[in-house]
Amino acid sequence: MPLIGRRQELALLLDRWEQAKEGEGQVALLVGEPGIGKSRLVQALLDQLAGEPNVQLCYYCSRQHRDSPLWPVISHLERAANFARDDSPGQKLTKLEILLAQGQRGSVRLSPLIASLLSIPDNGRYSQRDMSSQLRRERTLAALLDQLAGLVVHRPVLLVWEDVHWADPTSLELLELEIDRLQSLPVLALVTFRPEFAPPWPGHTHVTWLTLTRLNRRRCSRLVAGLTGGKSLPAAVLDQIVAKAEGVPLFVEELTKAVLESGLLREEDDRYELEGPLLPPVIPATLRDSLMARLDRLASAREIAQVAAVIGREFSHELLAAIISRKEELADALRRLIAAELIFRRGMASHATYIFKHALVRDAAYASLAEGKRRQLHAQVAQVLEERFAQVVEAEPDVLARHWAGAGNAEKAAIYHLKAGERALAHSATKEALA
Image 1 (cartoon, rainbow, N blue to C red):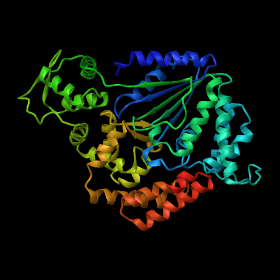
Image 2 (image 1 turned 60 degrees about the horizontal axis):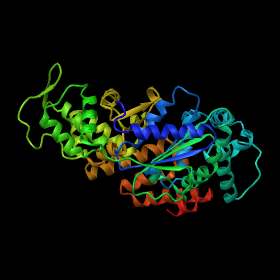
Image 3 (image 1 turned 45 degrees about the vertical axis):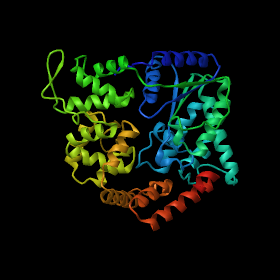
Image 4 (image 1 turned 135 degrees about the horizontal axis):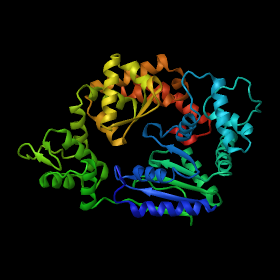
């Protein structure tokens, strides 16, 4: 879909990028309600910059990991280094060193700190002196800042922090340090968050606030036309879509797709015609109703989406396949969910990971589960993680805590919450440890 109704905002971001390339670092704060198009605007900028040299660092915050110190950074580093689950610690360290060498500023010095952050045992590969958890924390944050400064030697950097309303306290501290540091670097930082979040850092002259507002009727109609391939909808249908979406682009998109998939319309050469009378319940009234109507029409794929939603917004093929034993049904369901653009895939085959199109899509699928089934699935996910994913158990005990809590097993949840707290405390992340 082309970007609609955000031309001025994109032009402003491109202007800030030009300033950043001259060595005057810039920060753009993109604020807006869920589904308003923050991520879409970021993607539009990424597309615009695809033809010119730059480095892109993308950190995605998660509701499920808001008490995990530096989880967005850890997740980015693991993706950027192309870690595989069956990599040995030595293989991961080699990949990490190659990645850090791109910064060209003391990567040998940084590697032990970042390896510790990623919970990779070095088995004596690095000679390290003992240091307190607080000193290690300070040096780790400094190492991440040095890596950012090293990356700009040859190319400007686009630094993206998505959904910082879910960021852990240590990540927010790192972001504040980056905002201060990048003033004299060729870096543009894009930070997205919802209106209820109050940025904890003070204002700066190099920081621009950009609030995304709802689309007007004309732009909503253009968005609908893009989804229908330019074919017009009956006026009554279009009126209901625009009225119910209330200018929220994600809702416009999902309502339109729900209507197109409903069998309500008959496709002609240049337009759609109603197959029957337009009754009030035909067009869903809320985003959740719209998403559930689409999932219902995908039949067995709905169950797969619900299981995936229990795992989280992002999930691996390996974990999902360990829970869904019907392999052919799983493959078909995933294909249908991808074709419907409800989930997206990164990687191939058993090494693939998937992510729901939007947090609201995951939430709708999760909310559709009966309470008993939800508990059962949380318990199943937790058991599979304990039995087959030792690294997750070791590095992300908060994930196990969340699933055992969702399963109603308070005793096991408490055990993993305690482990998560102790782990956070070992990194001197006091706020996360208390949480």
